[in-house]
Length: 61
Image (cartoon, rainbow, N blue to C red; front, side, top):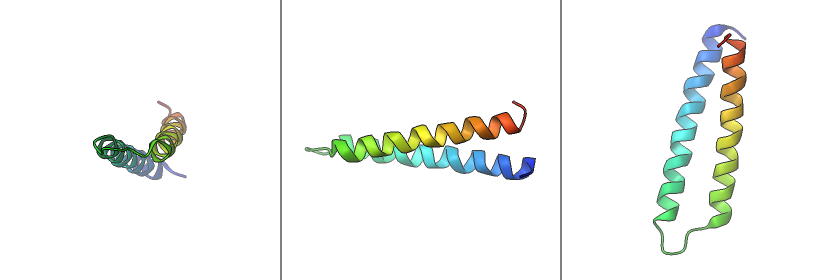
């Protein structure tokens, strides 16, 4: 995978993290937030962050 693809992956992963953080924020605003769903989104965010670290490593950063 070339640098262009790694940069695209970084943009995509950062966007997904922002989307998931918004979902979590909205869920916490509910009267009875679904803690299981929030944990799921948090684990996905950790996976996205791991992907970001790998892409940065491949870009030499």
